[in-house]
Image 1 (cartoon, helix red, strand yellow):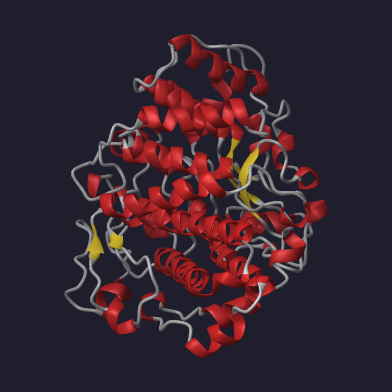
Image 2: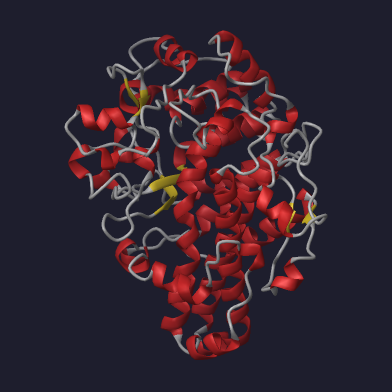
Length: 496
């Protein structure tokens, strides 16, 4: 997939549209679509183009989730975009990471809607099998983009077909439940119609099991508490549905648990059996920037590597929190947690930072050119989410939960536990998935975002981070979106 999709990805954006402000985009012209969607290769290129906005997802995961959580207590050398995110500042409506998350996901949705419209009107040039597969791929991606939006912003405009700028300007934000209805419909279609596996140049496309895994996470997220806001949790109590989907992957898919933790993230073993869905990157073609995101610039220069591998944040540092370091070093029943030295640079003078994705022997031309994929959903996550469902009343026993957690702990070399609870499970997930952008969303769906974050502020004696309140479970609507159509959107409470 790296050598097939990304060679044409960015040229496709010129056809499919990529204005700075997606919700003001006009549709692809009838002339362009008439001239383009005439054969299978045209449709395949267009489908590949819908993947393009996935490139921004790792930055969203690291700066809007990892940075927001108790994994990192960053230090700034000035007024940095991520400061307000890390510090829970209410005046972040113009922050670049937030604006980009809105625009990138709606760009992806616009491109998806464009291709789905073409499949409906001109799909007769395709075989039935290809028309179904392409539709399933694009609907998976549209669901992915909408799920990213609803977890970040709560209510968002629901746009399921190509709209003109004038039409978009009158579409308000929809209730979260309505957005979920589209997400679920898309993923159900994808789960029923995508292949179980892809091989060769198609490796990396979402499979039917990736759709099931994402749909399970959707049900799990929906089942979370509301916090009294229009956020991603709506108390839907769909743990049974989520557990059934996770079980289908555990018992019937080609994915499996890898015994060596480091191998999951090896540059030489990408798309291994642990990876249910990832975002593809290739050096020089479409290199990744996320390995350098949370690595201090001084790390590179102190090791004789060009500061072009830095992240542009000068002397800022991104230390792993004291509480998490303590968690790694004291959670053992026996042995040493091997995830700690693999995930964290422990000898750097400015404090420990996440080095999980760094292999300097594989570096590309700059810090934005790493040839490593970003794993979105992996088998261990499926296992632990099944345990989470059981603890919420889905079919299964405490022994099942303990067995899952201890399977993960055995790989880490830290010994077995018994009577695992939700807080213990969340701590294990924190250690397992550091640097993968899951922690903040984990805390939100388990109702721990406010209590755990405030407890962490106290435990680590952090004064720069504001008190966390329920309003901060979601981010503000970007100011530019509010200003475009005054009165159409109401800002999320707590932001100015």
